[in-house]
Length: 217
Image (cartoon, rainbow, N blue to C red; front, side):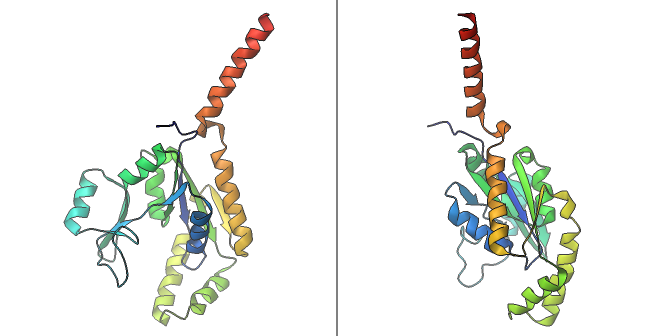
Protein backbone atom coordinates (compact mmCIF):
# COMPACT_ATOMS: atom_id res chain seq x y z
CA UNK A 1 0.00 0.00 0.00
CA UNK A 2 1.36 3.43 -1.02
CA UNK A 3 2.11 5.72 1.90
CA UNK A 4 -0.16 8.80 1.72
CA UNK A 5 1.64 12.12 1.22
CA UNK A 6 -0.27 13.73 4.10
CA UNK A 7 -2.48 12.93 7.04
CA UNK A 8 -6.20 13.39 6.61
CA UNK A 9 -8.03 16.29 8.23
CA UNK A 10 -11.20 16.42 10.28
CA UNK A 11 -13.13 19.33 8.78
CA UNK A 12 -15.78 20.58 11.21
CA UNK A 13 -18.45 22.71 9.57
CA UNK A 14 -21.07 24.35 11.78
CA UNK A 15 -23.69 27.04 11.30
CA UNK A 16 -27.18 28.00 12.37
CA UNK A 17 -29.97 26.44 10.32
CA UNK A 18 -30.46 28.42 7.11
CA UNK A 19 -26.91 29.80 6.81
CA UNK A 20 -26.05 27.56 3.84
CA UNK A 21 -23.91 24.88 5.48
CA UNK A 22 -25.54 21.95 3.69
CA UNK A 23 -25.20 23.58 0.26
CA UNK A 24 -21.54 24.38 0.90
CA UNK A 25 -20.91 20.82 2.11
CA UNK A 26 -22.43 19.31 -1.04
CA UNK A 27 -20.28 21.51 -3.28
CA UNK A 28 -17.13 20.59 -1.38
CA UNK A 29 -17.88 16.88 -1.62
CA UNK A 30 -18.63 17.18 -5.34
CA UNK A 31 -15.33 18.98 -6.03
CA UNK A 32 -12.97 16.84 -3.94
CA UNK A 33 -12.72 13.08 -4.41
CA UNK A 34 -10.49 12.84 -1.34
CA UNK A 35 -13.06 14.38 1.02
CA UNK A 36 -15.66 12.04 2.49
CA UNK A 37 -18.72 12.87 4.53
CA UNK A 38 -19.02 11.47 8.03
CA UNK A 39 -22.37 9.66 8.06
CA UNK A 40 -23.83 9.99 11.54
CA UNK A 41 -25.44 7.22 13.56
CA UNK A 42 -28.83 7.80 15.15
CA UNK A 43 -31.47 6.00 17.17
CA UNK A 44 -34.37 7.76 15.47
CA UNK A 45 -36.49 5.76 13.04
CA UNK A 46 -35.74 6.08 9.30
CA UNK A 47 -38.00 8.45 7.39
CA UNK A 48 -39.52 7.58 4.05
CA UNK A 49 -36.82 7.26 1.40
CA UNK A 50 -33.91 7.17 3.84
CA UNK A 51 -31.37 4.36 3.46
CA UNK A 52 -29.24 2.91 6.23
CA UNK A 53 -25.63 3.97 5.68
CA UNK A 54 -26.53 6.83 3.33
CA UNK A 55 -28.48 9.42 5.33
CA UNK A 56 -27.65 7.81 8.69
CA UNK A 57 -26.48 4.60 10.28
CA UNK A 58 -29.71 3.60 12.01
CA UNK A 59 -29.10 1.86 15.34
CA UNK A 60 -31.19 0.78 18.28
CA UNK A 61 -30.74 2.62 21.56
CA UNK A 62 -29.03 -0.43 23.03
CA UNK A 63 -26.60 -0.62 20.10
CA UNK A 64 -25.80 3.09 20.29
CA UNK A 65 -25.18 3.03 24.04
CA UNK A 66 -22.88 0.03 23.58
CA UNK A 67 -20.86 2.01 21.02
CA UNK A 68 -20.56 4.88 23.52
CA UNK A 69 -19.50 2.54 26.33
CA UNK A 70 -16.86 0.91 24.09
CA UNK A 71 -15.40 4.29 23.07
CA UNK A 72 -16.42 3.83 19.44
CA UNK A 73 -18.14 7.21 19.02
CA UNK A 74 -16.05 10.25 18.16
CA UNK A 75 -18.84 12.55 19.33
CA UNK A 76 -22.49 12.12 20.31
CA UNK A 77 -25.44 13.92 21.82
CA UNK A 78 -29.01 13.18 22.78
CA UNK A 79 -31.54 15.43 21.02
CA UNK A 80 -35.30 15.14 21.55
CA UNK A 81 -34.93 11.66 23.09
CA UNK A 82 -32.76 10.31 20.25
CA UNK A 83 -29.01 9.82 20.07
CA UNK A 84 -26.94 11.26 17.22
CA UNK A 85 -23.20 10.87 16.76
CA UNK A 86 -20.17 10.12 14.59
CA UNK A 87 -18.78 6.55 14.55
CA UNK A 88 -15.03 6.58 15.17
CA UNK A 89 -13.79 3.66 13.03
CA UNK A 90 -14.64 4.95 9.50
CA UNK A 91 -13.19 8.36 10.41
CA UNK A 92 -9.92 6.83 11.59
CA UNK A 93 -9.69 4.62 8.48
CA UNK A 94 -10.20 7.59 6.13
CA UNK A 95 -7.54 9.66 7.89
CA UNK A 96 -4.97 6.86 7.70
CA UNK A 97 -5.56 6.77 3.93
CA UNK A 98 -4.85 10.52 3.73
CA UNK A 99 -8.48 11.48 3.14
CA UNK A 100 -10.27 14.38 4.79
CA UNK A 101 -13.53 13.79 6.64
CA UNK A 102 -16.24 16.45 6.64
CA UNK A 103 -18.49 16.80 9.69
CA UNK A 104 -21.79 18.68 9.55
CA UNK A 105 -22.27 19.14 13.31
CA UNK A 106 -23.45 21.72 15.82
CA UNK A 107 -21.16 23.50 18.27
CA UNK A 108 -21.44 20.69 20.83
CA UNK A 109 -20.38 18.04 18.29
CA UNK A 110 -17.54 20.26 17.13
CA UNK A 111 -16.36 20.76 20.70
CA UNK A 112 -16.32 17.03 21.36
CA UNK A 113 -14.31 16.35 18.18
CA UNK A 114 -11.76 19.03 19.05
CA UNK A 115 -11.40 17.59 22.56
CA UNK A 116 -11.06 14.00 21.34
CA UNK A 117 -7.89 11.96 20.76
CA UNK A 118 -8.04 13.07 17.10
CA UNK A 119 -8.65 16.73 17.86
CA UNK A 120 -5.18 17.85 16.78
CA UNK A 121 -6.09 16.88 13.21
CA UNK A 122 -9.27 19.00 13.24
CA UNK A 123 -9.96 22.36 11.67
CA UNK A 124 -13.21 24.12 12.53
CA UNK A 125 -15.19 26.49 10.33
CA UNK A 126 -18.30 28.43 11.33
CA UNK A 127 -20.68 29.78 8.68
CA UNK A 128 -22.54 32.97 9.57
CA UNK A 129 -25.49 34.48 7.69
CA UNK A 130 -25.19 38.12 6.59
CA UNK A 131 -27.63 39.10 9.35
CA UNK A 132 -30.29 37.69 11.65
CA UNK A 133 -32.95 39.32 9.46
CA UNK A 134 -31.60 37.57 6.35
CA UNK A 135 -31.45 34.26 8.20
CA UNK A 136 -35.12 34.53 9.14
CA UNK A 137 -36.00 35.51 5.56
CA UNK A 138 -34.24 32.39 4.24
CA UNK A 139 -36.05 30.14 6.70
CA UNK A 140 -39.41 31.62 5.70
CA UNK A 141 -38.57 31.40 1.99
CA UNK A 142 -38.36 27.63 2.27
CA UNK A 143 -42.14 27.59 2.92
CA UNK A 144 -41.70 24.22 4.61
CA UNK A 145 -42.09 25.01 8.31
CA UNK A 146 -44.91 26.21 10.53
CA UNK A 147 -44.50 29.45 12.48
CA UNK A 148 -43.64 27.68 15.74
CA UNK A 149 -40.94 25.64 13.95
CA UNK A 150 -39.40 28.80 12.46
CA UNK A 151 -39.38 30.41 15.91
CA UNK A 152 -37.67 27.32 17.37
CA UNK A 153 -35.08 27.36 14.58
CA UNK A 154 -34.39 31.06 15.16
CA UNK A 155 -33.96 30.48 18.90
CA UNK A 156 -31.59 27.61 18.14
CA UNK A 157 -29.67 29.79 15.66
CA UNK A 158 -29.09 32.46 18.31
CA UNK A 159 -27.78 29.82 20.74
CA UNK A 160 -25.52 28.31 18.06
CA UNK A 161 -24.05 31.69 17.07
CA UNK A 162 -22.96 32.40 20.62
CA UNK A 163 -20.16 29.87 20.05
CA UNK A 164 -18.62 31.41 16.90
CA UNK A 165 -15.43 32.40 18.76
CA UNK A 166 -14.57 28.74 19.44
CA UNK A 167 -13.87 28.14 15.72
CA UNK A 168 -10.66 28.52 13.72
CA UNK A 169 -12.33 30.21 10.75
CA UNK A 170 -15.46 32.37 10.45
CA UNK A 171 -17.03 32.75 6.99
CA UNK A 172 -19.99 35.00 6.22
CA UNK A 173 -22.31 33.57 3.59
CA UNK A 174 -23.62 36.76 1.99
CA UNK A 175 -22.65 35.44 -1.46
CA UNK A 176 -22.66 31.66 -1.89
CA UNK A 177 -19.97 31.49 -4.58
CA UNK A 178 -17.61 33.82 -2.70
CA UNK A 179 -18.17 31.94 0.55
CA UNK A 180 -17.47 28.63 -1.18
CA UNK A 181 -14.24 30.00 -2.67
CA UNK A 182 -13.16 30.97 0.85
CA UNK A 183 -14.05 27.49 2.14
CA UNK A 184 -11.94 25.88 -0.61
CA UNK A 185 -9.05 28.22 0.23
CA UNK A 186 -9.20 27.24 3.90
CA UNK A 187 -9.06 23.55 3.03
CA UNK A 188 -6.22 23.92 0.54
CA UNK A 189 -4.20 26.11 2.90
CA UNK A 190 -4.59 23.67 5.78
CA UNK A 191 -3.54 20.78 3.54
CA UNK A 192 -0.30 22.57 2.68
CA UNK A 193 0.82 23.17 6.25
CA UNK A 194 4.26 21.73 6.89
CA UNK A 195 3.21 19.64 9.89
CA UNK A 196 0.54 17.90 7.81
CA UNK A 197 2.94 16.82 5.02
CA UNK A 198 5.53 14.26 6.15
CA UNK A 199 6.66 13.86 2.53
CA UNK A 200 7.78 17.49 2.41
CA UNK A 201 9.68 17.19 5.69
CA UNK A 202 11.48 14.10 4.37
CA UNK A 203 12.44 15.82 1.11
CA UNK A 204 13.62 18.94 2.93
CA UNK A 205 15.84 16.86 5.24
CA UNK A 206 17.23 14.99 2.22
CA UNK A 207 18.09 18.23 0.40
CA UNK A 208 19.66 19.68 3.54
CA UNK A 209 21.92 16.63 3.69
CA UNK A 210 22.82 17.03 0.03
CA UNK A 211 23.74 20.68 0.62
CA UNK A 212 26.06 19.67 3.45
CA UNK A 213 27.75 17.09 1.22
CA UNK A 214 28.25 19.66 -1.54
CA UNK A 215 29.73 22.17 0.90
CA UNK A 216 32.31 19.60 2.01
CA UNK A 217 33.44 18.80 -1.54
